[in-house]
Length: 180
Image (cartoon, rainbow, N blue to C red; front, top):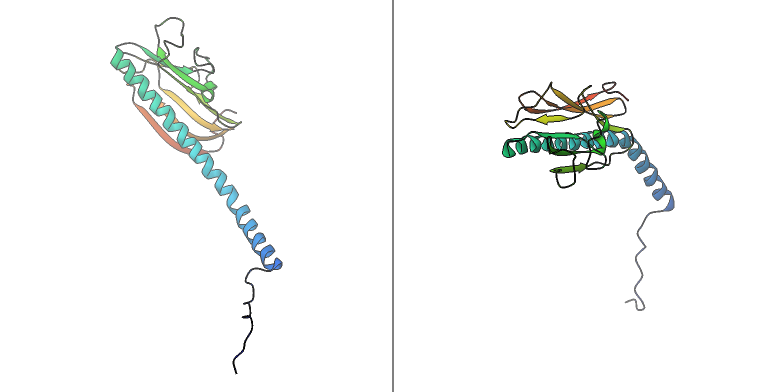
């Protein structure tokens, strides 16, 4: 005997409310375990980006000094025209300009880098070294310069320029390595 009439519908697939809530609890627990590691990864990437950005601009300043046969300075600046003179002001940005150009104008600034880091992040230079000057032969004038990349008092890395003008970058993770 054959059955006539409409075909029977298959049971609907899906999750029950209890299964969905259980899956969400498990997912939330895993996310809360991964969050601290994710924040540390974000901090490491932010510090690596700062190291590379500072290093590349220092290399640009050195090359500009050699190409222009002139003394070139790189200093912290918040407005993109004047040097701030603040050793911890590098996190707002910096400018690269000829040292002997007199009062800086937007026309004399070779490069301006504006930064926007989260609160607590800063880049601080060696005590007494608020800027760096490259001579026409590419040497750095004065003592070695250290630019430390910090979050609070945690040192994430540094960029060092020696007297010959060589730029070196270090990745660090040290608590208490920076001035707050």
